[in-house]
Length: 318
Image (cartoon, rainbow, N blue to C red; front, side, top):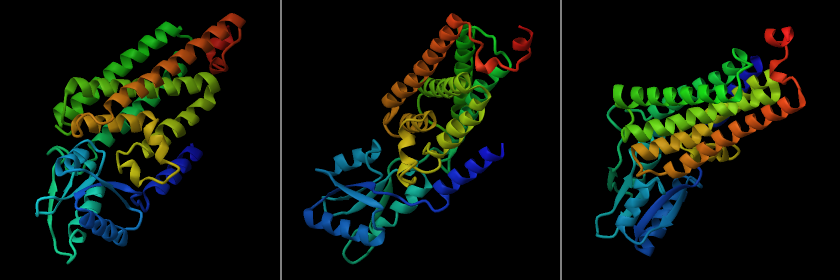
């Protein structure tokens, strides 16, 4: 337990004690001179924090923000320069982007800064998606752990049925709380419940596979891998661009990170990450359950007593 706690402290402090943006994409639709000047001022203000990407017109730059291809846009095509951003990316991005209005003009004067995708009224701090995801990941881990501790002799079919019931119940209940009760996550309720169901199933199946392979050692491994690393890299507290380089890649493969991006896409960003989220989470579920099935067949065919059953009362009496 102490090891898990220390890993939690080390990983979360490494990720969040002094977060810095790393090449945050900014869309620019302006003349060559205005774009170059804007880029220079950005680099002087925050070296390596922003990456300027040119767009053909104001509509394309705005669309990039709306689809989360860019975190902000500088538009100067009709004599009225302005900075566009999505408040739905959270307070950290807003704090980085809103000062761009001061850096956009040669004389340093303020220009119009517009939030084109604000957070919902039920989520003033932009943390509701993270809290919902964290709770569901925790529940998935606990289910994966308890399914072997409390019922080690379940057949594969029974275990998969219990996994499906848990995932559907957990995903639906979380969607009801986050969307209907607190109005914190806008968007389609059915789609939200579906993503949450897949995320719950992926975490539970991943934890169960670790315990199936490593026995009791799978519990701390699942805690570190699914809970600590998964939630730290989820992008729920800060977007992945703010994470240390060694943690960023996990955001695109771990269930928590994939789920958070898909939920944000459903709620605000025109389904950004939803397609990839469905595919990746489904792969997690199918791979982990398939691996459990294969291990059960191998154990049954060779008559080997599974390591997860050792020391259990049923194993001792058998």
